[in-house]
Structures are given as C-alpha cells and as structure tokens.
Amino acid sequence: MKNRGKSAFIFFCIAPSVILFFVFMLLPTVNIFRMSLYKWGGYSSNKTFVGFDNFLKLSRDMKFLQSFQNTIFLILIVSIVTIIAALIFAALLTREKIVGQNFFRIVFYIPNILSIVIISAIFSAILDAKNGLLNSVLMVFKGEGAEPIYWLGDQKVVIYSVAMAMIWQAIGYYMVMYMASMASVPESVYESASLEGAGNVHQFFSLTLPLIWTNIRTTLTFFIISNINLSFTIVKAMTSGGPDGSTEVFLSYMYKQAYTNSSYGYGMAVGVVVFLFSFALSGIVNLITKREPIEL
Amino acid sequence: MRKILNKKILIYLVLGMLAIVIVVPVGWVFLASLKQNGEFYNSPWQLPKSFYVQNFIDAWGSAHMGQYMLNSFVVTGLAIGLLLLLALPAAYCLSRFHFRMRKVLNVLFMAGLFINVNYIIVPIFLMFVDGEKLLISMWLSPFFLNNIFVLALVYAATALPFTIYLLSGYFVTIPKTYEEAAYIDGSSYFRTMVEVIFPMARPSIITVILFNFLSFWNEYIIAITLLTDPNGSKTLPVGLMNLMKAQNAAAEYGRMYAGLVIVMLPTLLLYMIVQKKLTQGMMLGGLKG
Image (cartoon, rainbow over all chains, first blue to last red; front, side, top):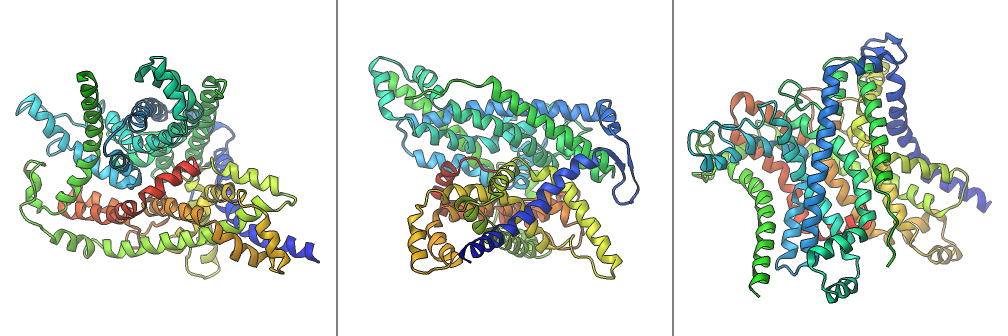
C-alpha cells in the first residue's frame, strides 16, 4: 500500500514538468529536424518532402555563407577579447589589494542584468554617426570637421560595432565566474611562489591559469553557444542584419527565412546546420583544450 | 617603492577605464531621458537644460509603457510561480527517490540544458498557429497567440531544465535523516516535501527566482514572436522595440530614453538590493542557461 502511494506521489510530482518539457522543448527540437526535409510555406498545408534539397540549396546560398562567416568571426573575436579581458580583471580584483574591490565587481556586472533591447538602444546612441558619444569623443582627437565613422552604416565597420556591444555585455559575467574559481586557489600556493621569487605576471601564467583551466574550458563551450544566441538577439534589435546583410548571423537568417520569407522548411534547415555546427565546434574545442587536471 | 606605486596607479587606471565605459553610457541614458527633443541636435555631452518630465508622462501614457509594465509584471510573476510549482516537486523526486525511468528523465532534462529557445521558437510558433486553426474549426475563439498567460507558460516550460538542474544539485546535499524522522512521525510524502524539505531549500529557491526574474523580464525574442497583434498586449522589451522604431521615424528621442529608463530601473534596483546574492548564486549554480 505504502509503495503504491509512493509511486503515485512521484508520478504527480514529475508528470507536469515532463509533459511541458516534451511539448515545448523536445517536440519543437524534433520538429526542426523533420521540417528541414520539407518545402513548406508555413501557413498553407501543402508540404512537399524534398529530402536534403534544402541543405543543397543552403550550400550555394551566398547570403547564408555570409551569415556563416559573420557568426564565426563574432564567435572568435568576442570570445578571445572577452576571455583575455575577463581573466585580467578577475586576476586584478582577486590577487591585488584594491580599494573598492566590491564597487568594481558590482559595476562590471551591470551590463549582464540589462535587457539586450536596452543594450542595443544604448549602443545605437553611442554609435550614432552624427550625435553619437563615440564619434564626438573621436572628433576631439581628429579635429572638427573630420569625416565621421558610420559605425552602423558602413558595411565594413558595422560587424565590429556588434562585436563591441557583445563584449561590453559579456566581460563582467565571465569575470565573476573566473573570480569564483580564482578565489578557490589556496593562498599558500602563491606564498610559496613569491618566496621563490616569481613575479605577479609569472604567477598568473604558471599558477593561476593552469589551476583554473577546467573552469576556462567550461566557459569556452559556453562562449560558443551563448555567442550564437547573443549575436542573434543583438543583431535583431540593433541592425536587423543590415546594412545589406553585413551583420546577418546564423539565427537571424533562420528567423528571416521563416518569417519574412515564409519558407519555414528552408529556415529550419539553417537551424539544423547551426545545431550541428555548435555541437561539432564545442566538441573540437573540448578536445584540443584537454589537459591533465592539476592536483594540489 | 616608486615602482610599486606606479603599478598601483596603472591598475586603478585600467579598472577605472572599464568602470567608466560601463557607467557613462548607462548614466547618459538617464540624463537623456530628461532632455527635450531639440536638445538632441546639440552635443550629446550637454547636460539637460531642465528636468523635462513630460518624456516620462508620454512614455508611460501615450506610448503605453505603463500598460506594458503591468503586463511584464504579470508575465514574469506568473512564469516564476508556475516554474517553482512545476520544478520544485520534480527536482525533489528526481534527486531523492529511486524509480524506473529516473535515469532516463535525468538525462533528458540534462540534454534540455543544451536546447536553446532561440532555435525552437519557430516550431513553437507554428504549433500555436495549428492550435488556433483547430480552435477556429471548432467555432472557438483563438487562444494561444497574443496571450500573455500562454507566454508565461512558455517561459516557465523553457526554464525547466536549468531550474531542475540547479534545484536537484541542492536537494542531494540535504541529509536523508530529516525525511526519515518526518516519516516516523507519520507525515505523508507530500507534507514532508512541502513542510520539511522546501523550507530548507530556500537559498536555492531565491537563486532560481533571481535568475529567472532577470531572464523573463528582459526576454524579447519569444515575446515578439508570440505577441503578434500590433495593437495587442505587449511586454516592456517588445514595447521598447516599437519605441525605438518610432524614434527612427519621428525623432521622438526623449520619449524613447524615458522608455529605456522605465525598463531598466526595476532590474537595476533589484540588482542593487541583491547583487551579493546574485554573484554568489552564480558561483554556486555554475553556468546560467
């Protein structure tokens, strides 16, 4: 009797979550893969099975290839700059005796709590060609009347503007993560290193980095996934992929194909490629960054 | 000595620079929200000539930000309530009891950590479109799209994997003796869970609420996809997107920056109050989904 009561209890506790998880997460994920094999306008019920046609078409789609290129560029540059900056700031705040350490930590984390829409609006204001904050500062150095930089209008520049916004948003978050793992390194390790005459920079590279390597590795995978998403949300709010596709990224292209173009099947094929790409890239990064963990 | 002093100065310079780069743009938005439209054609560094509060009145009233704020509170509150109602018992059972399927379910929810909402929002939208068609064919009125309650449900459902992961991690650390004592006293499974275990899990419940408040309050991709009616109800970020577009067309700058402040203020205030908990929670909970 007791046992049946237990089973019923477990069932009622878990069933609601499992059902919702199936309906709103698993089923849609399966649907992405299934729909990528169809040619489908979405609203009409006429779906035709086309096999891998959508994928063949993708491999010749210049706009998709451009979004591919943009995404990889953003993943690379944003990850590299953010990791380096976050590590430096984390090390400064944990290893050095800083007055106002808390203040800096609190301030650096602020961008992470803001909505992407707000960040986009802020950067639109900063990067405005005529009345933007950045250009008005640059004018002081370049002299009055110099040609302004069209941060959001110039096809060659705009991708850097997007990268800037992404880095601004991410540094604080990763800094706090690295601070957490740096704080767990026992002080005695550094003391003995200092006695042997190792300078701060040397300590950073030979002690701190190897000791928190596992944590850095975890964040690498995280960078790939979150940059694919973040680039989409920022691009959607800030540039809509423009001008002329120069900031189009994976998911913004998928979204555009699905809604503006109403070719859902094709859009989902993009989704499948992104899905596989992010898994493959995470796998590769995980493999090449594998080191023997250091035991203290 | 001099060398050490130079080094310190350099460190403060670097830290100060990043602080400026973050504080100045955010602070600038607050100042800009008090400017009159004409002032935006002058240098962006000029302080507002007066406190032009009309911007806020316009944003709140004629741009409907007040209404949207209410919607945002309803959606966020409802989603968090629903999420806790679903995830707490599920996480408890998944981490505490041994039963068939437990392993499979744990693996499934773990896999769910890797499913990002931005990928699956299109199929979810299409599912709702089909649902509307079905309702209309049965002579019922549409229900799924443009419904902030459905939006809250989607938020709660998509936050399940991360929340269950975080809560399970906490539940396994609670010693089993507490429950055994309760069972001996004749307490049922349900009462033991609600009255003994949940109160002990308070720190992790607070972490869950904080993280999800921020992510639901700030979310806009799902909201913009599921709230399709231009005249229907919206959440704050979606309303803000509309203000940004309107600003491009009609040069209503002041109103837009006032809207920005309205969206930002609740999160900034919350952050000031709980910043310590938030960054600590991050260290405990590991990665945010």
